[in-house]
Image (cartoon, rainbow, N blue to C red; front, side):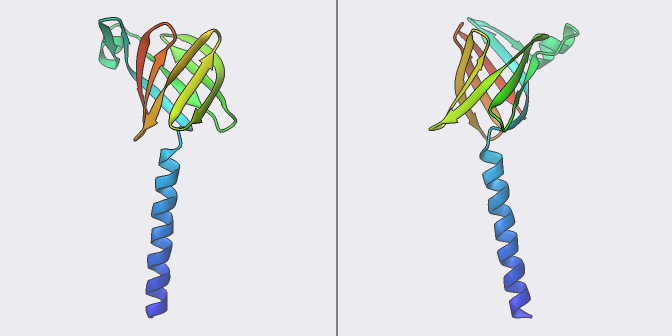
Length: 117
């Protein structure tokens, strides 16, 4: 009986650590929650009131990505190194971080994006 309890506890701990490790990975699908350019911010709610979605970002395990911003779709590549997330689509480079299922990116044209899983 003791052996079964210990085994169950160990299996539970393994599952918790596995899930924690997976959630730290930036791989996945994110929706843009807001876009800030200069002093102007457009939220997801603002976009909906105009009948549009702000967009999304899909980071694939292969290192490829698809970034949709205000119905403009582009494909590119991404990588994460030392906590810095870099996304390159066409001529635009985005750098930022991924933490707690939130991606914060700044583009080379000085636009800031906040995305959530």
